Length: 123
Image (cartoon, rainbow, N blue to C red; front, side, top):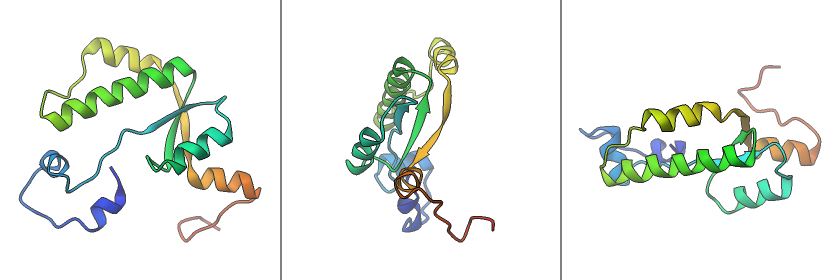
């Protein structure tokens, strides 16, 4: 869920699902990378505007499977179909280790070779 879509959201008598279907809250499938993905590819994905956050998976297969699973859940959710996953899909997903999260801030810090401090960081 994109935070900027919640900032301007006017509370209505609707569920989160209804708000997403009615496009009052934006939800996107996350980006998936592997530990071997180079910074150029990560920057390109972030630049394309899909997200500024991605999940780092143990392998290309894990990243692809997680992406496919996320696409399926999202399309079923948006179309109003049952968006729960089968036990088999969840078992497969649980075996696909996600090693961490990478953000645009991480990439910028790597390029600048310094930490970016903001008001939320402890001194």
